[in-house]
Image (cartoon, rainbow, N blue to C red; front, top):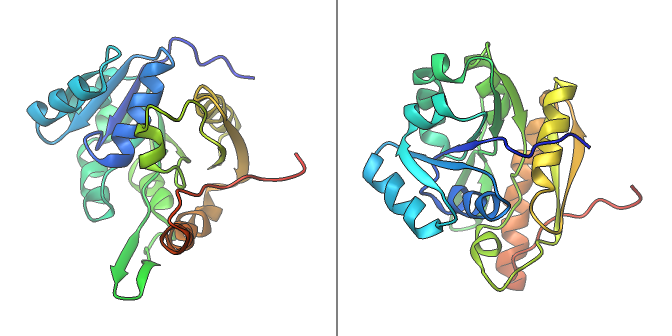
Length: 217
């Protein structure tokens, strides 16, 4: 297993539910966590809520400082943000967990993405970075719940750089209960992102916070 101890983690969009939940779990695992936001004050407030040594600043500042950067922003602002951070993210592992989803009276549904998926869009913009897709199906409610000591799910990790996917798999596993599972090349990220709509439907029907487990490995 790849050693990820000592790596600092920035979370762009870390004031949102999913970003904040991931930040909390990584901080509790002993990582230096940097919360990013368009507003430095909002980022600092979110870091204060998380505690465990987390800090906050504007997205560009944390992107430049961290070893690994997780993108957890709303899809509508995804491409523009990454375009503005090309220089700060060059040479780094960038983990995209953005789900392009729409919502109507029938529930959640996957949105079309010109590049194929949000992760492929990130790779097309960040040609100097190593883009990995992961953490799409992790419940923010579970991540933030102090009563949940172990998070019962697998994180599917996709990418074209083996060293980068190995690193992100190991990073997933610092969260107690979580297993990182290689899920294929980045070109297969579309169905992973789209599957989130199905999981939302499951959770609404059964009033749950369901995740995924992969059997027989």
